[in-house]
Amino acid sequence: MPILVSDTSVIIDMERGDFLDDLFKLPMEFAVPDLLFARELAGDLGTRLVQLGLRVEELDSRELKRATEVIRNHRQLSTADTFAFALAESRGWTLLSGDGGLRSLAGANNVPVHGVLWLCDQLEGNQTPLERLHAGLTAISSHPRCRLPAEEIEIRLARYTD
Image 1 (tube, rainbow, N blue to C red):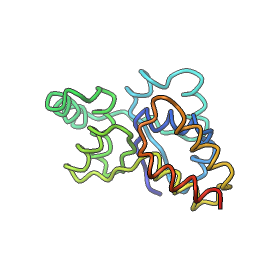
Image 2 (cartoon, one colour):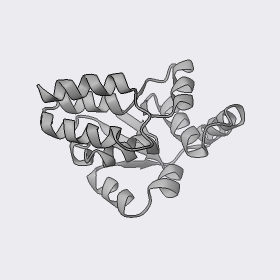
Image 3 (cartoon, rainbow, N blue to C red):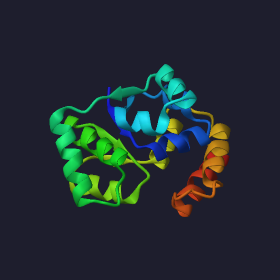
Image 4 (spheres, rainbow, N blue to C red):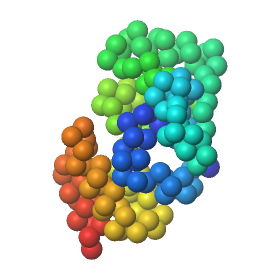
């Protein structure tokens, strides 16, 4: 079963769209680094995510060294993002991110990377009702901090209304 390492923004968007239960029904596993979990997800949301099946992974010394190297060279990335990158890169897992800098870094290092819209496509392929997909993506895209491409959102929303 594929394992996907998520940054915080993807998880927050999935929660905003009320997709968390659907997400953990997909034929894949989801993981976050322990530092990201402790700093950004601990509490009610984190507890719910773990109950749904989220894996909280500790980086080994080699992965910690790589994360430190990445943060030195890419100051625009958060420490949590560099931990997610190092985890995905080291273990050959896919990265989930909405951060442009993190996505570019992953691409430059041949780490597969996807985002929220790809997850919506996976949910659609897993028979999530179109009405739920439309409502969820509408909620995500109407948030003031949404950075998803408007054209791609419109394509999906049109598809979800058919």
